[in-house]
Image 1: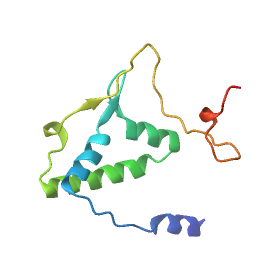
Image 2 (image 1 turned 90 degrees about the vertical axis):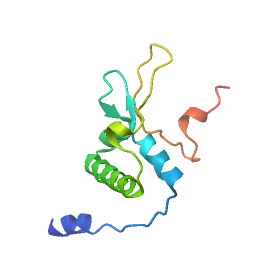
Image 3 (image 1 turned 30 degrees about the vertical axis):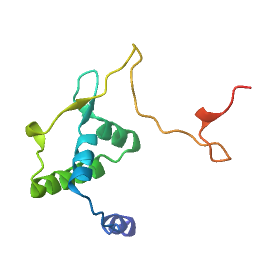
Length: 111
């Protein structure tokens, strides 16, 4: 088991160069909250489904750090966004399943 824990710690990293507008867009995407109580973001919900909460927390910390260095507002100084249902249907995050041809199951014809 010692091998698997050391492999986890030595993840390969990749560089991503962003301009200010791209960084603002990523900050805003990570800030979209879900109803009904507005306490969880889309990103947090996705990471719960995929069991990647620590990755989401680390990524958000990196985004905040970049924003602060770039002078881009974060926290209470940044705009807030919400996903609101357009009908009574509740919203959740689910992974789409692919069929053998590589198409998602929602694109199959009825007839």
